[in-house]
Image (cartoon, rainbow, N blue to C red; front, side, top):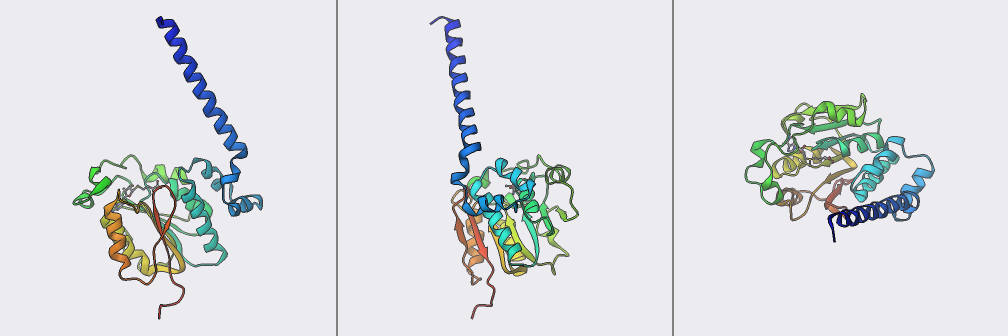
Length: 251
Ligand SMILES: C[S@@+](CC[C@H](N)C(=O)[O-])C[C@H]1O[C@@H](n2cnc3c(N)ncnc32)[C@H](O)[C@@H]1O
């Protein structure tokens, strides 16, 4: 095969692949509803889903995690479970945008350094987290995150080292807390801070509860030993664990 024929063949393969991806994209855009939860489709048809959440659906990489956030926040609003929302580990605000627009009238606390992992927390980490340096997840800023989410009086940025950034919030109550800090220390500190402040019926979610993140497994295991509730695994892409706070004190 001469060079021209070779280039033509490669171009043909690339064009063929592009066509396949386009056809797949169009098919799922028009007919892809069948694999979505019925309740989500009904909420959409009833006009209950805000435009900003609809836009997030297409961009959010983990659809099961996305629908779970939507279901939990809908339940919290339907059942009038009191309290603010919080995310520990915000990075560029992809999840925070969904949380805010699904429940825009609730305060949403955003806890992050917004400049990467604190070096002290990285010491002693194992698994995936052992490959991290303070430069990982540093390519963000408060301004970028606020631009991603959109201006709102209900966003409260707590920039800096968690749990120090929780100072002054001792009397706050939370309806939903999403923890996504990847490491043992902030995860355990988050459980100690948020669990006692979680409203009855409120929900706490911990991302990355699997073998690649031994620090998360350890923090959850240590904390679980002292509480009556069970953590429930969610079948999303990165093994979220979810806990709903008991409505009555356990006997
Ligand atoms: C995986 S990212 C969060 C991703 C984000 N939840 C999302 O959905 O895109 C983890 C974040 O946790 C933050 N983080 C980890 N430990 C922290 C600590 N002790 N204090 C503040 N932020 C921390 C890091 O700065 C990083 O931005």
